Length: 257
Image (cartoon, rainbow, N blue to C red):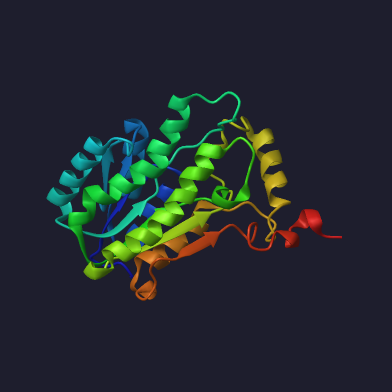
């Protein structure tokens, strides 16, 4: 097992990519603390993950809330070897109708929250620890109506490089994973119902060279690699997990003859 004896914290670990990553890290021997805002979902996730999981209700947009998470992690684990700053939120922010509060709420969770998540546990990070930040292909896609989300995720990419340099003297690595469209609950509001969701998945698959929507485990495996000693000489970089949608879009089914 690649993570035997390691301690990890995953924000937003009660569903989607966060939950799948927690499952995989535990399978590889780690003990994992996960955070989530919904206590019911959090309890269900911990119950599913088993005795090597710990659930902490928190909103990453609250610096005081993350300070409480750090205190609980310190009491339970003593230190951290892995941090996956995964929690985030989305939603459209069209330029003609978006309010300052809505725009800033996305930035607060996705960008400011990531910074203060790292800050809250930085003193707990052991030498050789791995920090992984979760970005998105929206950082480069230029998708209409998603200015706040795209800007926040682009900020995460840049922040990862800064933190990699800043934490290098302590032997701490910082990297970024950048998922493309993935089959997670984030789509439920856009495509309510099984038929609408299947149609959405087909439309997405047409624009992915590998011909399918991503799965949470695709990104979880990238996180596992970055969390493990297999990537011990990798820091300040980004792994894009999007089936080629941003790197080789011309290979997508929609463009094939």
